[in-house]
Image 1 (spheres, rainbow, N blue to C red):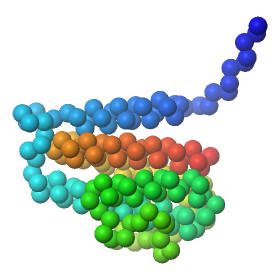
Image 2: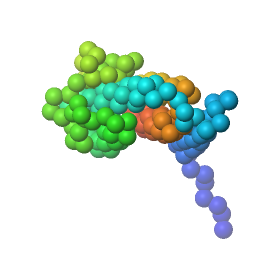
Image 3: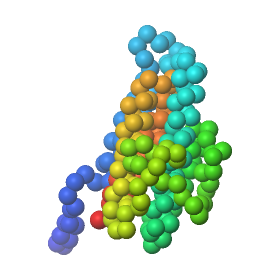
Length: 183
């Protein structure tokens, strides 16, 4: 019996490979402790950890605002964006935020922010009128925030480092999915 022809392979890494490597790297980095820290990184400065949690919550709230803005400008993208936005809301909650209005459903008056600083108080450019451009900007915001969190986790105590690693890996996956959605 003849074998069927191989399926058409798309250029670039496979989604499964990308997600597995991002998650593996994040888990390894989150589980390591600083040299000379016998208790695995749990004796870090509480004020440093508290500030990092608060910033991470604000950053995630800003990302939720960006999702809201894109959803308001491009309702046709709802199927792709609503699950990713819901994850960003869960990230806000995981970092102890949520009091400033990040809710599970998109708000009618979004407050987006720039891709380099996803905080809700930053003034934001308008959402691009082209859906692909809007998705590309949202992917850039996710990627930038994931990179910032991946760098910050190296200086955090154990549990917070693991949380940052997990959320950074999720952000990298979101960026990938948004980039794929823009194609």
